[in-house]
Length: 298
Image 1 (cartoon, one colour):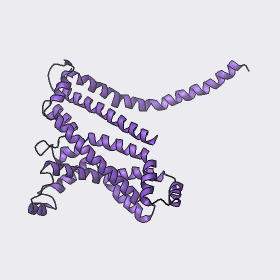
Image 2 (image 1 turned 45 degrees about the vertical axis):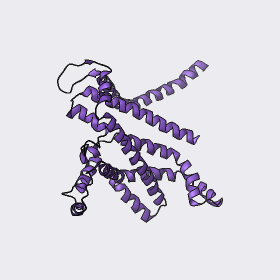
Image 3 (image 1 turned 135 degrees about the vertical axis):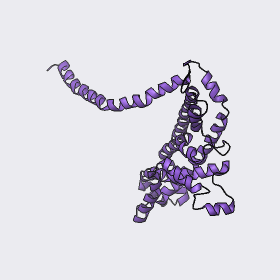
Image 4 (image 1 turned 90 degrees about the horizontal axis):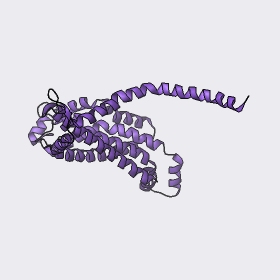
């Protein structure tokens, strides 16, 4: 058998394996293209075009949509509020998620019960949880209504109270989810590392600060990206609980996109321009976060 024949014989199985791999990947690629790439291309096209919701002329008008988006009266306020909410929710979720994970890290019957209890709210849809808390915060239907009336307190009556009340909903809903992510990261740390730290006389705080946190950095990077991205795209909780009130003080960027597209101007072009701005901001923020975590790890 010649060398060329042997080479061709080895190449055939590789070619078949490559073709089989492409066949397996084709359904996923079709879904990605149909549900992500095509809509993304349409949004970019809309952002540089006149695109009224119902009737009107369509055509290229860049950069008018982006100018109108930035000049919108609620654009700056929505960005500031979204960033404020993102910082508050991210810090609380990461700290509480890590604290709960450390609390139930050891496997036992009691800890397993606690894990399940903390995780149960994550099984509830965000819209359903928002409706549940809307009733709980209501001054008329809430079980705390008499107490709220006697104290003159309204969970959603002021900008600060509305922000804190909505953040409490998110922390209640997602703390168990982030606990699970942190728990997976903690269980991935070898037990020998903690034993070596204890044998060297390290205290619990020293072990946590110099051993646990550095080895947990990949998990912290993942959870931070998820939490920041989800908070920047907040919509359901504020739409159901506050409707942007009081006095338009709790309008998020995604709420502004919805309002521009379907409630106020009915202008999909300007809404698409805001969406593109948000997408670019998310890419930059996530890239910065991942680079920061990688530099610290190196």
